[in-house]
Picture (tube, rainbow, N blue to C red):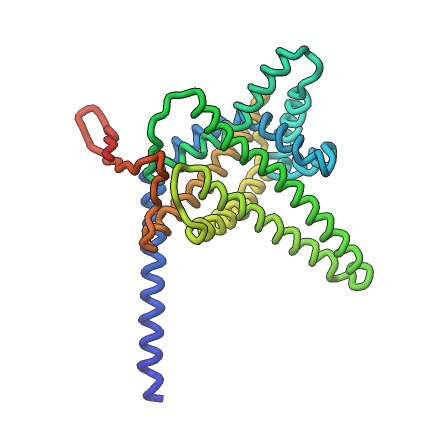
Length: 324
């Protein structure tokens, strides 16, 4: 019995050290989150979403609809949106999407419409890129050229196209799982629905994690390893799953139309976007602190520099000074 006491004391001390490290890690994330004005960044992202959500949905549904069929994809997408932002907002977005399709209006109108679609659909990802650069203390070197503008937008557009292909993969895997679960359910009725629910959740969780990992690695002007973005991507996905339940409960228990009237759909979309942006930014701060703790700070890309922002109090307010 005497020999066990030192071992138990050592385990207890080790547990306390781990708990202290975890608490310190969490405190650093909260500190960085508060320091980076994430509420302002979230408001900016919500603003861009209003103008980008319809072009984004149009491109994603068009790409994934090539394989799965546009009607089937549209039904799946708006079914998910209905659970996130409420049926009224989802219906309003569906009406806006229907009015956005380009029909035979002449070649000039079509070209202008496609350019507007390209710029609009990339607005969300461009805003995310700027936010991540700021939060991770990175600033791209100034390049005032039309080529740079379109190359930047092209990178964002590649993410939009990628979402379309990921939807195809998701629908395909879910169809396979549904067929397998139906066959299993005919033999073991109690296992079929459970298997379908668990597998569908695992597919959605894995694809969401992959999307966040790609955003963290490729969107900002940084050099960062996969081993550093994956923990943050998993953490962000967990936050999004929890946030989806919370925001869904909010829309189920409140009636925005009674408060905001005709603007209820727009307000609901803003609320959902702002809440989701804060979840994403908290995950981004996790990645930043994780890299610092592991001794692998996020490095700027060759066309970017690291900046240090110091908040200096002056007589007429607060000035943010950037120092390279």
